[in-house]
Image 1 (cartoon, rainbow, N blue to C red):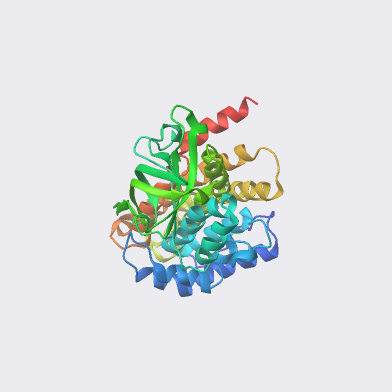
Image 2 (image 1 turned 120 degrees about the vertical axis):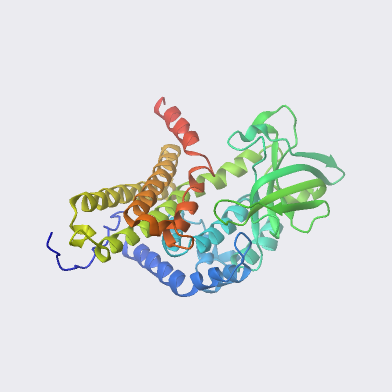
Length: 391
C-alpha cells in the first residue's frame, strides 16, 4: 500500500446554534486550560481538592461565568446553561481535573445561590466565585442514590434550628469543602415532600467524613452528621421543599454533564485522529486503511450528534422552552454513552500503548465511566424519556 502525504486534520463542524461570541468563549477556555490550568492540576494530590486550581479558575476569569455579577461573577442575572456547557466541553478536552473542579463548585453552591437567604448568598457565593471557598453537594446516601426518596438522613427540630444526623456518600469535595448543600428528611413517611435542604458549613461541630478512592481520582468522599446543628436561617428554600431545590440544580447541570462527556470524547477523537497519521503499519499510515478511516468517520459523526443534543438542551433551558425534561435527559444519556464508546474506539486504534498507566487515553478510559452514573444514570434517563413519550 503506497503511503499518502500527511494532510492537515479538519476540525469537526461547530454547532450552528452557537454564535461567534460563544465560539470565542470555548476557544479561550481551551487555550487557558492547556496553558495555565492543566499544569496546576498536575501538581495537585490525586483525588483531593486542589485549591490553587480553583483560584486559577477564578483569576483566569472562567469560574465567574457560573455566577451573577452581583456576587463576583460574569453573568448579568440568570446564569446561562449554554455558557456552563461551553466551559465544561472546552475545559474537559484539555484537563478533566480542571473541569471537575469547576463543575463541583457550581453543583455545590447553586442550591445556596438559587434558594438561600440574601445573607447566605452574600456569605458564600462571592467566596466560591473567587475560588476562595469550596462547595459540596450532599444528596446521595447508601440506600438513596437514584432513588432519592429513600433518604435516611434526618433533620429534627431543636430550638431555632435543626439537628442533622446520618451519612452521605459520593459527595463532591467531601470532606474538605467549606460549605455543603445538604439534604435531609424533616418529615418521616412524606416521601419527596418530607425532604429539606440546608447550607452546612464544613467546620460545623459533629460533621466529619473521609475520602473515597475511585476508579478516576475525583475529590469525592463521605460525610457523617452526628447531631450537626444548623440554624433556621441556613435553610435553602422552604421546609419540605428540598427536592425542588435539588432538582432545580440538577436540571441545570444535567445537559452540562453531557458537555463534560463530549469534551472527553473530543480529546479522545483528536488523539486518535493524530495517531492514525503518525502510526506506520502495512506500508503506510493507519489512516490509509479503510476500516480505520471509516471508524474515524463514525466517531466524528456520533461526537457531532452528541454535541448538538447537548447544546440544543442548553439553549432550550436558557430560552425557557418546553420539553426541557426530554431534552436534558436525552442529551445527558446520549453524550455520556457516546463518549464512552469514542474513548473505547480511540484506545482500540492506539493498541496496547493506550493501556500504559499515564497515557492520556488510559486516564480518559477511567474518567469517562462515571458520568454514565452520576446525576442520573443512563437507565434512569431512559425511564424519564419513556415517561415523556406517553405525554
